[in-house]
Each structure stands twice: as structure tokens, then as C-alpha cells.
Amino acid sequence: MQSVAMTSPRNKVDSFESPDFYCLDDLLMAEHKLVRSAVRDFVKREITPIIEDYAQRAEFPAQLVPKFGKIGAFGATIPTELGGGGLDQISYGLMLQEIERGDSGMRSCVSVQNSLVMYPLYSFGSEEQKRKYLPRLAKGELLGCFGLTEANHGSDPGGMETNFIERSDYYLLNGSKLWITNGPIAGIALVWAKNEQGKIRCLVVEQGMEGFTTQEIKNKWSLRASCTGELIFQDVRVPKENMLPEAFGLKSALKCLDQARYGIAWGALGAAMECYEVARRYALERIQFNKPIASFQLVQKKLAEMLTAVTQAQLLCWRLGMLKNEDKATNAQISLAKRNNIEVALTVAREARQMLGAMGISGEYPIMRHLMNLESVSTYEGTHDIHLLILGADITGIPAFK
Image 1 (spheres, one colour):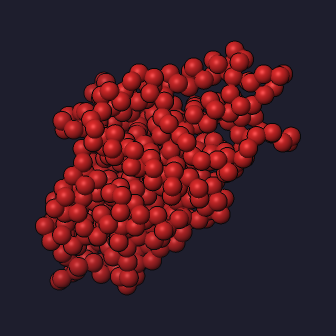
Image 2: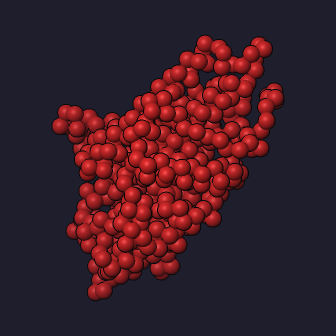
Image 3: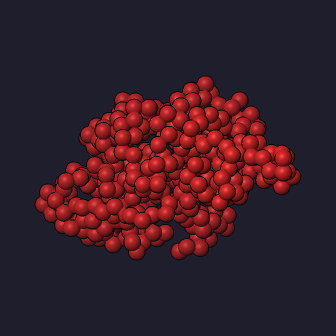
């Protein structure tokens, strides 16, 4: 590969500014802009300078966890009296947009903590459980994970095999969960399992409980800076007070997934915005045939299509955020946004990779890292095709996956 006569991005200041072709900032409140600005500055200061090295080493930057807590990224929508930020859904979405612009793995960590750990504790937990866990989770003193997916049960979590039986003052838990973000480093795991009657409930399993072990998944081509693992339960004694009293059935677990999917829609948009902006700047600087490649028609076509897709995704996120604020967003609407925005981000990343040529696969630029990460984002919290079926069921009234 020939070298490119350009200054290495590692030596440049992260000067990202988001595209806003339809003046969507006019629709944001001052609080939204303040939150976005604070998180964007955090990403430029704490994530951008280190993330390429951590991704290359396949290592999670654990030092960011308390820093996420300090800036209010954990528990953003949880009431302040429980340690949360008390923010609205658009503020939360903008947070995740900015964090995933830095890296999908970092957004995954934050999403899990918010949507899959703190949300179920707040929505389905007892007052004692809320007071015990939420403030520490919000500060980043405690990290959590969500144990639903199993090796044999991904898109069909209702077939889970993890189970527990009731004893006098505890539950005896057996089974395993796979592909669990934060799993190997989490202090608590919210584990969905079947009781003796086959009913699904949720148990809070704490690190250090006898019989509870974790194993990190290695050799990933995607989400390399994220910590992913397996949870293994061998006759784990879980105190009865660790069951979430209001979590009943798969319906409760799917409510948590809707929260996560909402955040993913915003996060994928952040990755798309970053790839577009990197490609735009590169096209203006890269000289071929004695002029910048931005002057060529095909490059302009790519940039125009990328900006169009990003703008559509921005509008979709804003409207969905408004519906979430009004508690009107349906699971099908969330599925549409999750599926669409990841597809947009993947398309934008692939076009950006083409525009950068050989440099597009280099760690000197974030494009290939985003592209690889988004392949996983397209799969987790409901695959691309599963979300099509969720929409299909909503359109026709006929669930094709049953």
C-alpha cells in the first residue's frame, strides 16, 4: 500500500462537529445541547485518544467506568433521589449518540448499565433493591450486566434453559448465559431464569456468590474494546430478597430490550455521523490528479447520499425521542428505528471505507473499527431480520415468528 501524504489523525485534535443539514438543533432545548456538548467534550478528551489502541489490544478501558458515572452517563433518566440524572429521553439519546461516535463498545457498556440493569431495577425492583443498587450503579462504583441470551437461545429467549428451584430461604440457580456485555467485570448480573413451573423471573446475582463464575470471550473481530463473556451458574444460592418482585415473564425482559434498542438507534447514528465527517474531511484533503477527490462527481454522490441517510436517521431519532418522552413509543416504532439506523450506519461506514481507499482499513482512521463494531450492533438486541418480523407483525397482525 502506498503511503498517503497527510498528517496522521492520531496527532490531530478531535474537532468533530455533527452534521445538521435540516437545522434539528432548533428543535432541541438548551438542556439537550448542554448535555450533548458535555458528553462530546468527554469523548474527545477520554475516548478518542485511547480507543484505537484498546481496540487493537482487545482490551476494555475499565478506567472509564467511574468517569462515565461522574459525567452522569449512568442512570441518566433515573430520578435524582435514586442517584440518577432525571433527564428526558432525548438527552439520554444524545448522550449515546456522542459515546458511540467514540466507540460502539463504550456505548454498549453505558447502554447495558442504563437500559438493562438500572431500568429493570427501577421498574421491577423493590424499594430496598433500588436503594441498595441504583446509587452505586449511577456513580460507576458498581457495574452490572443483563443475563438473558444463552448459547442455544438467542432470537428465541423464551426457550431458555437456565433455571432455579425454591428452597427455604434461597433459590438454587443453574445454567449459563452467553454473549453478555460487561459480564466478566460486572459486580451484579440480572439473570432471567425459569422457576419450577416454567415461569420466567429475574434474579440479582452478585459477584462472589459461590458457584457463580464468568469467562471472557476472546478472539472477537468486532467490539474488541468491549468486555463480553459467559455467565455460569452451578448451584448458586441466591437469597430470596434478590428476586425482582415485579418482573414477570418474558414480557418484562422485552421491556428492558426496548429501552436498549431505543438507545442503540441513537448510538448507531453517532457512528454514522463520525464516518461521514471523516470521509468528508478526507475527500477535501486527499489530492489525486492534481485536485481534491471531493471535486469528483462520484465522491460528491457518495457524500450527498451519506448526508441524506444521516439526516433521515436524525429526524427518526428526534421523533422517537419525543414519543418516548410522552410514553407513546411502541415496540414496533423502536424496532424500526433500531433496524433503520444501524443499516444507515453500516452503509455510511462502507462508503466511507471506499472513499478512504487503503487508509480506510488502517487504525489511523476509525472507519474499519466502526464498521466491524456495527456488524455486532446489527445482531444484538434483536437481529436485523427479527426487527423486520416485529414490524411485519405490527403491520399485519400476524406474528411470523410464532
